[in-house]
Length: 390
Image 1 (cartoon, rainbow, N blue to C red):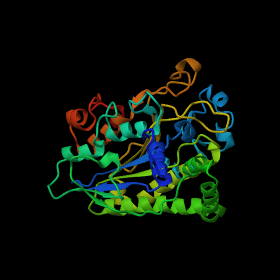
Image 2 (image 1 turned 90 degrees about the horizontal axis):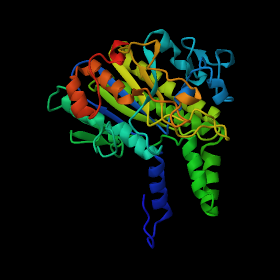
Image 3 (image 1 turned 180 degrees about the vertical axis):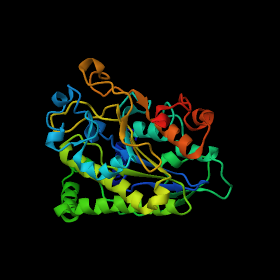
Image 4 (image 1 turned 60 degrees about the horizontal axis):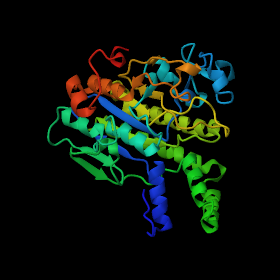
């Protein structure tokens, strides 16, 4: 948002622009689309920069404990062991039955091509447009609709007041307003606190809203129900006529007191995936791939406020009965000082777009050349992708 000298802007207008710049939507987008066949594909956008080193912790890396003295866990301090090197944050332990059923995998040290600024808006734009820069104006899931064989009567459907970028584009999509009671995440509340800090009346009003609306855990419980209800709605629609869905979970911008904030939102992600499975039913779940991705990871070192700052490499989550699960995939770069990107980030060794392309190929038989020329321009991908082999 640019404010020209001499221009006037209401507090409401400033707040709307600032929230947009912070990429912290209060209304969580939810989209579905119809496609032929019985295979399903779901994307979950984790907005705010999910810390993959917290969700799937490399406790077996010798440098990890020193980089994460308070956030780092071990199997002896609550971490759920996955394979003797990586462990799952206990807040997401509801996912472990899926791991044991080989319906859950993680891909570590992955990122989009975004490297330049660590800004939410730019990072999310590239995550959703599927390109190598921010110039691509349509979303990769919208472009996917054009290369899946389907009849003219099958259209995309977005349940939200405005279309999220991932499903925006030239392929026809219906738009319908969805629920508006998804509660704000803790990072969004912190943003509003900082925004209103110098305005006494607004600061007092914000404190009153927090006191009456977010106290005694009611805020978190209501938000959790909203996320789960959204996942159930997606599962119900996918069980019937629809085959592609996308929704978002925000709240991952954990600059301060990450342990409590991350635990809450990681629990929401786990609950959403489990709710999606339950709503789909056994037959549809067996034909489903869920891909959860974020705009960038976070710094490998804790900061001075018990949180982490914007980074690069992170984790993608793969779930569903159509997933070859029970493994942590990807090439682990290590956390030694000389292995970090710019001396501060997990070095990306994989491209998030390749994971998405592999799953679209797997689920809908889209030819690799169409994936690299029309869906993910600039991507190098073929049928031998490790995400297909794994």
